[in-house]
Amino acid sequence: MSNEYSSLLIDQRSVNLKDAVSVSTVSSASTNTSKEFRDKGIVITQLENLSNEICYEVFDYLDEHAIYKAFDELNARFQKLITTSSFLLKIYIDNESHLKIEDCCKNLRIPNNRILSFHLHDPVQAESFFQNCTFDSTFTHLKSILLHVIDDYFQAQQLKCLESLPHLLSLTLVLYGDQCYNQEDMFIDDIYEIIFTLPYLEYSSLSVIKYNDQYLPTFVDKTIQSNSITSLHMDYDCDINSLLSVLSHTPQLHQECSVKFDRFQKFVKDIGSQIKIFWIQGYLPDDDDIEPDQWRMLIEKDLPQLEKILLRSSVTTDVSKINSVIDQLNSSFWIDHQWNIRLEIEPDESSYFVSSYISTRFDFDQKIQTMSNSTSNELLISNVDDLPWQQPMIEQLIPILSQMKFTRIYSCNSQLSLDNFIQLINLLPCLDSLKMDVVSEEQCNSLSVEDKEKFLSVSMLNTITKVVQKMNIELTEFLIKLCPHMTYFQVDSIKDDDDDDIEELVQFILLKRKTDIPHLQSLCLNLRNVNDELITILRNIMDSEKITASDYLIKSSGTFIILQWKLQ
Image 1: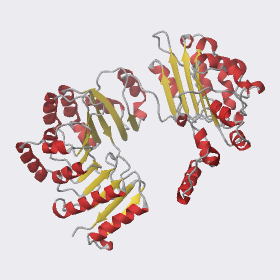
Image 2: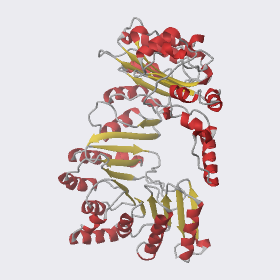
Image 3: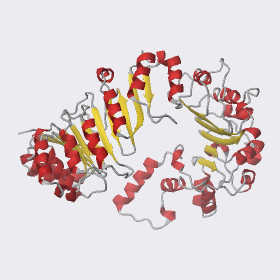
């Protein structure tokens, strides 16, 4: 910036400051400080008693104007804290800011080398900024820039100054207007030519808010190439030639934009012979349902070198559509590739996933010998948005789902009745793994005599060996009765359970191990608070079960505690 604009005042109201790069490397230090206070029993009642590290973490949640207004003249200590060169700042100005950018220098002094990110969400403010300011090499810590600009008042050459920034990693531009579509000015080409010359840029996003329906042509100078950009977002309408032109200048690209399926097919046809990793995650915009056969034909025809795949596609939840998806996924093409397949069913919309990567949906400990790395078909039945399942649809879906050899099933707040769930388990004889969130005592008691008999039959015949559940004693009892052949049992905590609750649960499971689940070898606890005291309690429980120390193992890793023992 010019000298008179080396200062900025920001009125920031609603922004998640955690979206940008960390303000400083104080988090581990503040964690240690907090632990030291707890260990010594120190209670902090005054702001002045907070450590510098904790003060900086508090500042991270405030806008710079608020920080300076509140602390600049409070005392010498805080004045020194907010003016030290190690305290990096994030500039954020939107159209709700009360102050104009040209007035900022009158209120707040910020040396350029302390600015970490600079985000202007207001095109009017951005216009004023470029009329009065510029970026230069003094912005030694600036890593992220976001600008909303109106193309009538913005020239691509105004971005040339970004070439002098020594550490710029992310650039996001949002353009408003139709000048971008003026082929004589080649406006968009000029922007890309500058973007590709930025030496350290890793992420680039260009969005165009247009007022017409034209494609945006792009023909960048072939001599310009970026060797740093790994992620590229193109949010505007362009033809395949323009897309290929941009991509030809980014050889290190790992991620790019999404397009409609018909255009995507044309794009893959042009470059597919080079693709070895095919990763499509999310939804292709404005398309009808894309079924597995469409992906199969694209892979067979245009991806001859494919080695790895991660594919996600969505379809409408109706009986005929799900039936079609399952029928197509059962084809020899998908089976012969031995890829993992997951089908997620929700009341309004469903998704299917195809992956060549090892599935880790159940968070099983990879070190446990009972964990299998073989391919799997996984079924997830969910009801996250609390939309009602229509009973006639469920009754029609269950036999259709049984046409696929699912090896894992996950019931996530599905609100399925227990009789429907038991019926589904009964029709999936290949099930090896089960994950379930909740079941109530009322549900268990509501089973009819006929359903209870069916439950007993299913529990005897199923081959489920790996079970994961949320912390719930009614659910634990239900799953122990349903899965007597389990060898691995994982319990995930959903709140800060106290040690007494965990102790009671473990004692209950170990008691049932003697009678109802004799094959159980591993119990995994996924908790919010793992501590030495709890591990000692678990060791005492194991000792009280008269299991010798050489016959069991307790280990902890992160939020997990794993108990393993030898079968008698």
